Image 1 (cartoon, helix red, strand yellow):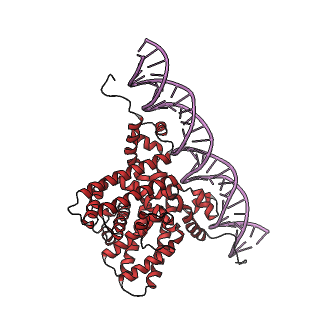
Image 2 (image 1 turned 90 degrees about the horizontal axis):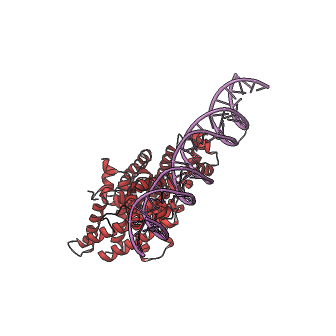
Length: 187
Length: 187
DNA sequence: TCTTCATGTGAGTACTCAATCACTCACTCC
DNA sequence: GGAGTGAGTGATTGAGTACTCACATGAAGA
């Protein structure tokens, strides 16, 4: 290695760049509504090269989804570590707060919402989303020690966040928006 | 009027047919993933005629979404009427059960999920979904007399149903699926 | 330097999509 | 029967779409 800064990246580095930047691309219009050209532009590469890094659009999206889940899970881990007590509800609240901070830019959450929608018809994506939630549920259960009901409510609240963000209810002040958003942290 | 049975429908009748049948078309792949040709086929008309009945695809989808919300709301009304007591939680449970029965074929629920996803980027759809939830939240609050927290939890549980259906978790038997699906009725 | 190989792209292909338009047919009223 | 109106369609368009391939360029060792 002569120079400190290579002009070309390794394929693996590029793949990671794509996974990171594609979140922003897919966040707006999801799997069907986002073109591979948009993903390429977000990553600063040509559209053709996307197909060198990933076999097809479905695999690309599934990889992006998996990447989002690992980011969310590591945020939960930080939240669990920051809990001020080992009381299950305290740990859950701390994880929820860490989640709220992570998704303050909304893109991660929106990809999860779109992934859920695409999972209905695309088996590869469904499998990625299932695997993500499987690991997440088990992690939350184990780290918090919460009851079935507490864990279930934790995820139900997360789903409610999807609704709140997708409708942008925080920018509407009305009784129904206050009811849905009551007690939900946002940064 | 010579014959008892007309061959042609009125435009209004056709529009209603389209609204009803398009639910099945949009349920699988949502707004971006469903073509107007598929919608036309489901309604038994030509693709061109879809554009005589609706100005464009976005308005068509928004109308379908609004139609779904009215169906869900009237199911809730039946549920509320069937409640065995006026205790808020009893009424909410009865409404939830009516909802569970209504969406046993999944299509209505899937359209709501896809509508939520499309609402992120399509303002006309976002407005339709907002209006639908606004009316539904107010109705649920008024009909049940439940507290802010009870109503919020009611909708959070509904959102959890979206996840359960989109991932088809009922066909996977594992600890995490039992946690998410605990106590959720399905018919 | 020269060869080798991975990184990266321009220019396509074959196809699908939403939307339009000229047109036909069914019905009603006189 | 004939004029007028609204229901309904076949054919088309122009703008994309995912995906491919021949080719260029940079890096690094012999």
